[in-house]
Amino acid sequence: MTIRQYPVTVRALNEEFQTRVLEAGSGGDLVVCIHGVGSRADRFSPLLEPLAAQGYRVIAVDLPGHGFAGKGDIPFSIPYCAEIASNVAAQYKHSRLTVVGTSLGGQIGGYMARNPAVPIDRLAMVGTLGVVPLDPDEGANISQVILKQRGVDDCRRKLTALIHDPARVTDAWAMEESRINNSVGAEESFDAIGRHFEGPINDHLIASDVERLAEQGASVGMMWGTEDTIVSVETGRASMERLPQLPMAWIRDTGHAPYWERPAAFIDAMNWIFADENIRQAQERTF
Image (cartoon, rainbow, N blue to C red; front, side, top):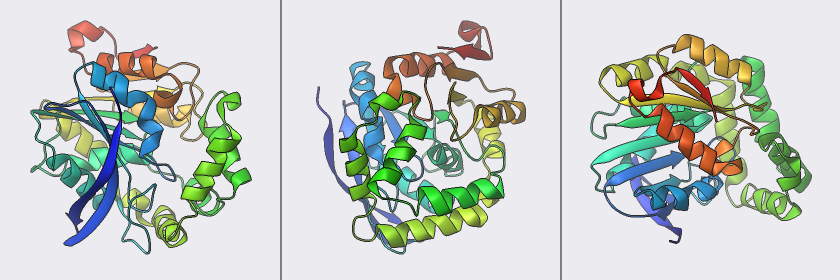
């Protein structure tokens, strides 16, 4: 089984927008993976083929200003990204839609629940933002450090913070990250994204959306790396307190990208949070 990639054009805010999709598998059981800020669809590569082997059609999408999606002075916001992600999903005929969103992607996934035209059947939020408010200092740090410092050494430091095992961060990976995040239009895009993190990021919290989604019968849960320092374990606990009805799966020995570090454990955890309550037999489990 191979991973395919290609451009996809959708409409958002009444204008066309082009992004890139990575895809594996086929059929109507669709999984849409949404990355976090400063990242790109490739981060889900270790997850795509194993999920496809379980019978899913899996796609990962570049968010605006990221990866090989359109760049420039984009109208970046949670609603804008959610509209794009929903409209990408709508291009794939499906009988069930699962959204896996990490960090900012989790907040986007929760906001997608507001779109009744593309209903979500299952939602996994991984090290997610948006359940509890983002501290203004953390928003400023994302804007001023993660988005503005994009040299090779900067990217190596950020990847080392992302991944629990620093030995897995290679020079080639840091170089690739830096080149993509300094491509044409990236500076303008990251400025726009930074303004959102320093401004209205907390205007679009998703806890109430997620609660409504679960009340409507969707399977919803959270997942967190036990060593996450980017969106901290403490934020994970606070998110559990805000949404006590949701199951939480902890992925041991992983940081902010558990799907990249331990994809097999991640899939086991994902299957667990989506299982019936009588099968889970707990609200919290470590994998």
